[in-house]
Image 1 (spheres, rainbow, N blue to C red):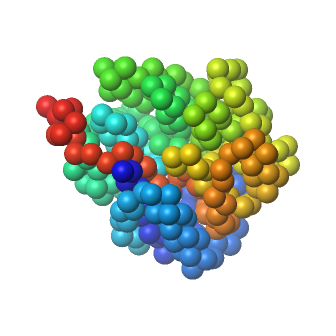
Image 2 (tube, rainbow, N blue to C red; image 1 turned 135 degrees about the vertical axis):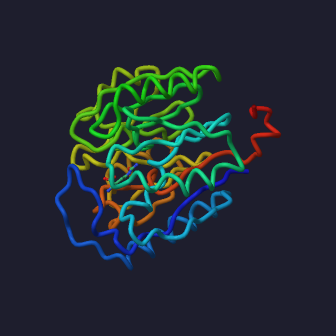
Image 3 (tube, rainbow, N blue to C red; image 1 turned 30 degrees about the horizontal axis):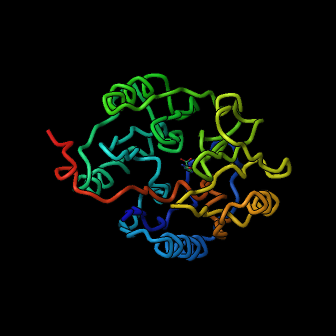
Length: 264
Ligand code: CIR
């Protein structure tokens, strides 16, 4: 059984951080209904959805992915690169505490979960405007004892590593070569985003299905042509806030860490 941890949309979503996009009007009610539909998809794919209440004063708090990296053995609570987002982490830490031993990213490191792509025992970390070398070192120290290999990847022209590449099947990634060096993923089958859809690399793999934004129809067609089972969702208002489909959930295998033998 998988848990999907999500958080309701903040009424202040329109005051979100923006890095590469210019501000557009966000319809918060529409964002809420899109988020609900997204959450319904997670449940339909077999996740036990746990929903944190909305944070009225934290505009970006719906993007829970950035606040933690949940491995089977431990959960690493991040220190988000944007200072406005740091108050989002304590409530996520409380929600994860029953399931994993917690570790914490400490200053001077900054890390957004959107920069962390785990595939099997490899953890790729984007060096972006949000995540730095010190974070890579700290994640390495926490994860290497559990046999993970941690690799830094330089990211240019987008917010996070997972704006540029995500996993869409066991050995397949969806990738935008203009934003990262595809050679890093040479051992994988690569599906390129359509040139007309530069932000289309963010897909959410749940089991063998991929939750994917309807905003990128050309890339969606490519995924389907390659035999990927897609679950299209409308997330236009979350995209305006520079989010997409991975960022709205933390998905992890459900077990009590004490039973798993990783407690101390
Ligand atoms: C931010 O700039 O932090 C938010 N407006 C968007 C965060 C999206 N997070 C993600 O894709 N992991």
